[in-house]
Length: 264
Image (cartoon, rainbow, N blue to C red):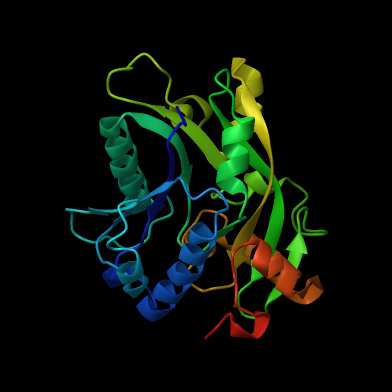
C-alpha cells in the first residue's frame, strides 16, 4: 500500500497580511507547483483564517482539505505562533486520518515536480523523514535566482534556511508510541544535526527546492529573529543572481509562467 503524502500549508490571515492580494498571488504560484507533481497521489491540508481565491480551482478536488482556524487572527510575531498553531491543526488532521508523510510548505515557496515521487522512493521504513538539502533562492521582485549556498551571504544547505525543506513521517492516532519527527528533530534547520545526535535515520532527498525571497510578505524577512540578516540574503540574490529561465521555472511547475510574469 502506498504511504499517504500530505502537503501542509499554514496561511497567514488576511487581517494580519500587509498585502492580501500579493499573498493570494504567491499562494497561486505555490499551488501551481503542487498541482504539477508527476506523482499525483498526494493530499493538501490548508490551515488558515481565509480562503485565497486560487482555492476555488481545487475546492471540489477530494485531495484538498480546508482547515479553518477558529481563533482571532494574530499579527506576525518573531516566534510565528500563529503559524505554529496552524501546523498543529495539520498534524492533528493527519493523525486522525491515519498518518503518512508530511511536508510543511510555506504558501510562497515552490516544490519540484518530482518531490512526491522521490520522497516516496527515498524515505524508507527505517527513516523518520527526509530533508531537501539542495535548492535555489528566487527574488520575487527581480526574477533573479541563485543556487545554494548563497556566496557571501549564506554558506549553508537549502534546508538550513528554507522551511519548505523537510518531510516527516506522522503516525496515526493508533500508533502513539511512534516518535513525532518535529518533536525529535526540532526546526527544519536542525534536522540533520539532530538526527546525527539522536541516532535517528534520516533520508537526504535527491530533489531541489525553491525558496522565494523579497516578497515583502515572507515572515522570516519581516518578523523573524534574523530579519535583517535574511534581507541581506535577498540583496545578494538580487545583485548576483541570474534570470530565472523557462526550463528551471518548468521544473517547479511554473508553466506557462515566464520570469517576467512573476508579478502578474
